[in-house]
Length: 364
Ligand SMILES: Cc1cc2nc3c(=O)[nH]c(=O)nc-3n(C[C@H](O)[C@H](O)[C@H](O)COP(=O)(O)OP(=O)(O)OC[C@H]3O[C@@H](n4cnc5c(N)ncnc54)[C@H](O)[C@@H]3O)c2cc1C
Image (cartoon, rainbow, N blue to C red; front, top):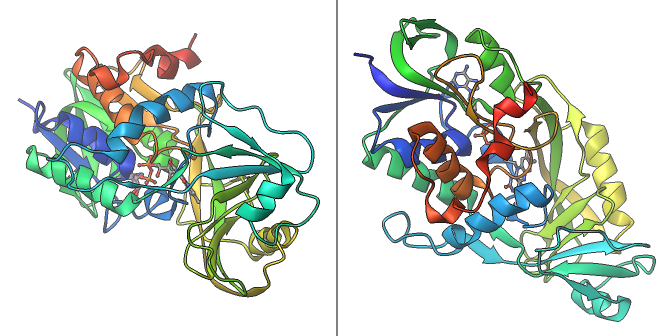
């Protein structure tokens, strides 16, 4: 008999949401290296739901997650996690091509001026995506951890996996504090560390690359910003959204390869972000209130990876959630749980082909 049926490495949104879906059915432990779950990417996101983001396959996971995020079951949360905002994909020339199922509307210059007062004249048009919303990420992550614990799961922080090896059909897991635990299934939800976790378990890495993204909170000399739509460049060089009455969250849309680490923003990326922001609106920049960076991790084809490894028995991948790991988490966790438990998927993900996200696509 093993100590656990499933050990999940990583207590970010990926590990917490999958844990919440399986803990009632399997004795599950989450091991998190940091002092708190959610310290890395999950705690550093831009916190929006944008269905078109990440391409057509990711959009299906996002869409399938929408109703759960907007109106979660009462025993999961009394409140929804979305606050409607809308998104303007602004352009100086051509409108972007979005996945066809996403609801959009073309906005011409006169309407754009009304929606974003002070937008500079060269931004001619926009594609408006009304479904875009802010996500209360901290509440969602907490709700998943609460459901996980209520269903019998255990989460341990300060519990870094240092190695694991297969032993008689199960895994022997070594933690940094010297503890050894056995489990039938080992889940890699290590975010930026996913390939390193695999390597520490003797499993071939998939080529999951962490990429740094910078966020800046700016104070500007203009009020009434809080409820304006998210504004992003159709060519993908910036986005910003009102955070407070006179503050915005801004990103230069950077994507810089990085080793997995406790990443910080670089001055040059903060400066680039401000430069691009000033080319969009005439709102005077007063000061940088804070800045931060996080790692978004991508598989080689930029689709997330859910499923059992092709070669290592009982090693399950839950990784590569890129810049969409929060907004896809409800559907992705249900899909991954069905794969892990070898059960039929719930209706929410019944029409999504899980094989698209299988790690086996890389060995084909
Ligand atoms: C700036 C930025 C903006 C973003 N904006 C959005 C957005 O608007 N909407 C959206 O949906 N997504 C967004 N994302 C993406 C989203 O944040 C990620 O996809 C998601 O948080 C990934 O979750 P995760 O659980 O895989 O990773 P993480 O939250 O990083 O969790 C992985 C955990 O694994 C732990 N770990 C690693 N190795 C070990 C080990 N050996 N032992 C034990 N524990 C280990 C780490 O400590 C970490 O806590 C953004 C990301 C960034 C950086």
